[in-house]
Image 1 (spheres, rainbow, N blue to C red):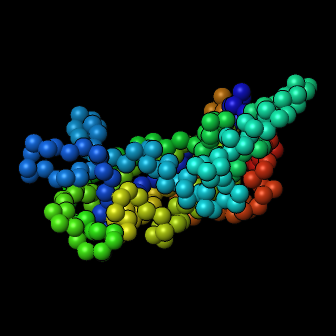
Image 2: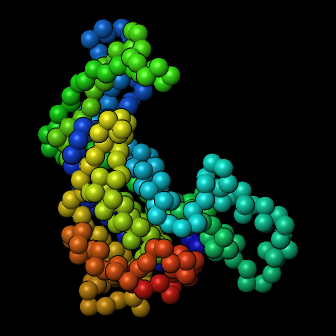
Image 3: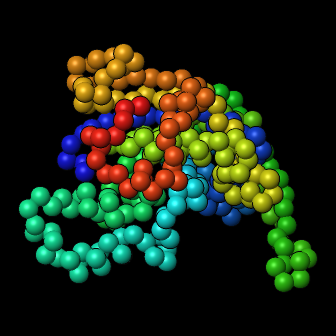
Length: 277
């Protein structure tokens, strides 16, 4: 289903820390007695080290949340779609030789809703997450904590450790879609609402109140490479038509008719018939 480019979209937004954010770098400096035991993940940005929320971490949070929202999503650890589809293809090998059979479209149709968005070992992902870097000032805080014995419930001996975290930070984020259906974007917008309500958190130590974020300054840019989708809201850019919408409420209003719990909506696999945003 990627032989042809039908459409593209980019959601740009900011995530502001409501509570401290901790994403462990996995590094420790055993030679520096003053260093924290658990440090925040940092990367170089414009020549200096800054905290970062990796795109892989964002993708993990969004996928797990969307799996809960979309009915029929597979368990990628116990019974992934790829295993089931591969077994079915072995059993129905002859069908692939039939005239007009499209393997990619059939694999998409057989995949669960989450795999249709995020991909699997059988089909390509339609959504990608960029690394998120802070915009403006931020603070790095330090806090001491003690490990708890899971059996006794008491503090373990010699288990005091120190970790660092980020607070008062504003992260610039971007999610990109290619060959998307409208329900793909609607599912992401539903996760935005859950983030703002505090039900979806990021990083570690979330049971201690860490990782709460606020979504703000959302914008959506949509491109279609099919001029039949053009309306007065789109501008012609020669190779494609595009439009840009600002504000989460304005964007949500464009998807009011999309019901992500409707199996008929989730099963569709013909992009040509999907209504333009």
